[in-house]
Image (cartoon, rainbow, N blue to C red; front, side, top):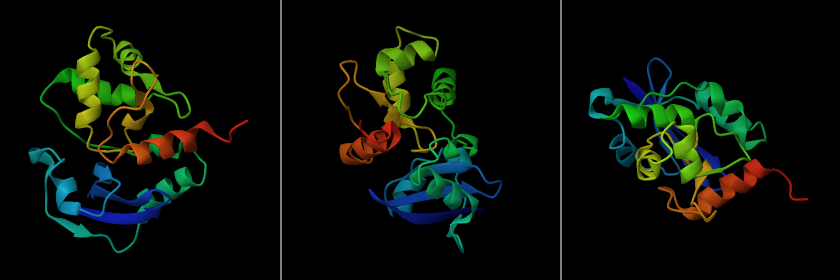
Amino acid sequence: MMWHSTLDTPTGPFTYVVSSAGAVRASGFTTDVPALLTLVHPELREETRPAADAGAIGAVVRSYLDGDLTALDAVPVEQRTGGPFTAHAWQVMREIKPGSPLTYAGYAELAGRPAAIRAAAAACARNAVALFVPCHRVVGTDGTLRGYRWGLGVKTWLLEHESGPMQ
């Protein structure tokens, strides 16, 4: 059994789907739970119900939104892919520090395959657990923002939130 909960955030609703073991399997800036469930690997899909409250995951997300930018680091996630590079790249993505976005080329290099820029971009696009696996911290090679499943406005807000007060 999985459960889901939605929080209000400065960029709109944020919904997360969590396994009975407490691992986030899908999340995004939406209230559309069926759409989020399509992001969960078929082997991980289970019946899903609304949570009675936001739970520990909600408290961590609120801490992040309140300024504890490392609060999300310890949240367990569970997603699967068909290839070892993507699974490794998702783990590496969690090492990108808030306020220090990487280009796709930098991310590919961090993942150990500097020439695999397209594969790195594909790992970002296939990420089912937005925010917890911070694909928003990867930007175009020229520093511009590229696609984000939840919209460039959300990506912009997240990056500005993580960069701290402007000097």
